[in-house]
Amino acid sequence: MTELTHPLATVPQDELVARAEADPHRPRFHFVSPAGWLNDPNGVSQWNGTYHLFYQYNPEGAFHHRILWGHATSTDLVNWADQPVALEPSEGPDTDGCWSGVLVDDGGTPTLVYSGRHGERELPCVAVGSPDLLTWTKAPENPVIPAPPAGVDVTAYRDHCVWREGSVWRQLVGSGIRGRGGTAFLYESADLRRWDYIGPLFIGDAASGDPTATDWQGTMWECVDLFSTGEGTLGAGPFDDPTPGGGTDVLVFSAWHDGDTRHPLYWTGRYAGDSFKPRELHRLDYGGRYFYAPQSFADESGRRVMFGWLQEGRTEAAMVESGWSGVMSLPRVATLDAAGELAFAPVPELESLRRDHVRIGPRTVGTGEVLAGVSGNQLDLELNLELEPGTVFRLGLLGGGDAGAHEETVVEIGHLTGEGALPASYILLDRSRSSLDRMVDAGPRSGALTLAGGKLKLRVLVDRSALEIFANGRPLTARAYPTLGGERVRVSADGNVRLHQLDAWRMDAIFDTPRNLFPGRSAAL
Ligand code: DQQ
Image (cartoon, rainbow, N blue to C red):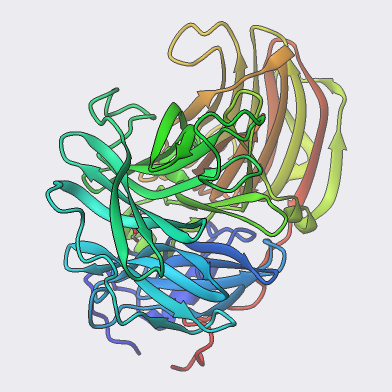
C-alpha cells in the first residue's frame, strides 16, 4: 500500500478507484479521472487525428495537492482511453506540482508549456514528447522564464496560451497587477526556450463592478486562452479587419481572487501587434465556478472545441470520502453568433451515446406533468419551445420522493418584463430542492437569454451529478447531488408555452471496466 502523506489522504490509494466507482453521483458519460482529484483541462489538442486531453490530476486522493498531468486519448471526443501520467513533479522548478499548460506542435515535436510550481510560486516550463505523445522529457532550460516581469507587483503568475505567429512563437502568461486588475503578459520566442518579454497584452480593472457580481473581473486571470473566431490565424490581420466575423478575437480567462476560483469570462475584441483592444466583456458560462479554467483548440476540421472543469458543490470531507473529485465538461463547440457573442453546443459526436429515443409534442405545456417514458439520471434532452410574453417554463429533473420528502432540480426559462432581480428573458437553475443533503451547494444560477419571438432551443445533458444546459447557445453548467435516486422528468408552465417537440434519450456510459489510478502501470504496483 502507498504511504499516506497528506493530511487529507485518509483513504488508502488502493481503495480510491472502488470508492469512486461506487459513488452514485459519479458521472458516467463525462470524462472523470480514474479516481482522486481532477481539475483543469490541459494540452487539449488533436494530433494526427487523435484527440488528446491532459488534465490536472492528484491520484493521492480527492484533494488538490502536488498535481500531475493525467492523460487520455480519443478518436471521437466521446470515448476516452487512459494513458500513462504525462508529467509529474521532480526535483527542480516543478517539485511541488505540474500546473496548467498547453500542447503545441514545434515543427513536428509535441511540446508542452506548463507552470512548474516550486514553493508558493509558479514559473513557465517546457517538456518534449515522444512521437506518440506518451513519454515526456522536461527541458534542461526549465524554468524557461526565470521570474515574472521585473518591477511589477503581481498577484500571481501562471498558465499559458502559446501560438505560432509568422516565424515566431508567442505566449501569454496569466497574471494580475496588484492594485489594478487581472492581465496576461505577452512574450515572444524563436525556440520556446528563450523568451523576450513584450508587455501586458491588456490589463483588466478589478475596481470596476461589484466584487460579488457574476461578471467581476477578479484580481488575477487564470488559464488565459486567446483565439480568433474568424477564418484567419491569430494576429494575422489589422485592428480593423473588414471581413465578416473575421475581426473578432476572444480572450477567455478565469477570474480569480485571493485563492478563490470565481468564474470564467471573455472579452471580445481585436488582437493585433502587441495588444488586444477590448470591445465587450461577457460571462462564458452561467454556472460560474462550475465551468472553470476552460481551454480550447481548433481541431483538424477547424472547429473551436472547448473543455472546462466542473468543480464540485460538496464539502471537502465528502469529496475525500467519495474517493474522487472533479468532472471534465463534455467538449463544446464555440461559434460567434449574430449578437457578436460566443454560442456553444456539445459536439455532435456525443449523439453516438443516445439510446431509447422518445419524442413528445407538439402540444401545450400544462401546469405540471411528469413525462411518461422519459426518466433517468443519464439523459440527453432536446426541447423546441415557444413562450408567449409573460410566461415561464419549467423543466424538473432528477425528481424523486413524495410529498413528505422530495427532490427536484429545476431549469426555469422566463419570458417576462424584467422587473425584479432577473433579466426579462432568462434561464434560472433552481437547486433549492435538488438535495435533502443540506451540506451541498444549493444556490441558484442564472443569466440572460435572447428569446426572439419567444423561441427557445433547449438542450439538457444530465449525467448523475453533472448538468450541462444550453439555452439558445448560452451554457449553464452546474452540479446537483440528489439523495433519493430520483429520475423523474417533469414539465410545467405559467401561461401559454408551446412545446413543439421534445426528444429524449438515455445516455450510455463511456467506461465499462474498472480504471487504473496509474494507467499503464500494473494495478498491483
Ligand atoms: N489550477 C491550476 C493552475 C490554475 C488553476 C493548478 C485554475 O495552473 O491557475 O492546478 O484552476
